[in-house]
Length: 130
Image (cartoon, rainbow, N blue to C red; front, top):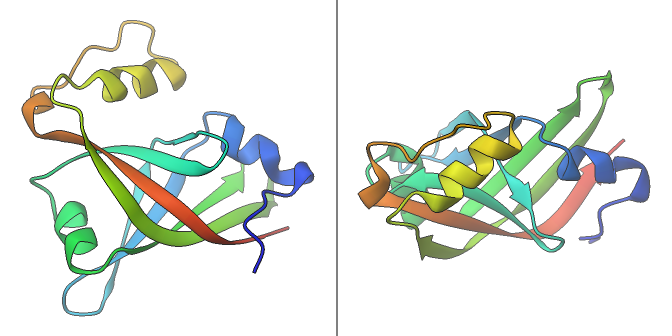
């Protein structure tokens, strides 16, 4: 299985595109949500809180998949499959602010739920795309 991001799809993970993160609910059904993200060259990082269903889903089953469609060519996409590898505390909401600025909000402030903020680190195990 390839975990390399193909050169022709790198822009999808380096540009501030929105993606869809899928997790598995405890009852086995899927939950998919739009997400901000950052690719650090190896892993995908997301901001989240410990109080929401997606976090609970990942505690129950660390499997996750993330897809991004090319806004310029919707037939071009990348799907990253993997697992939750790490949860990093972010009690000041600094990563949320960082992502907000990455996505164009120069005056992004920390959210009210900063005390519950974490960074979800996805380890990629398979890359699919076209």
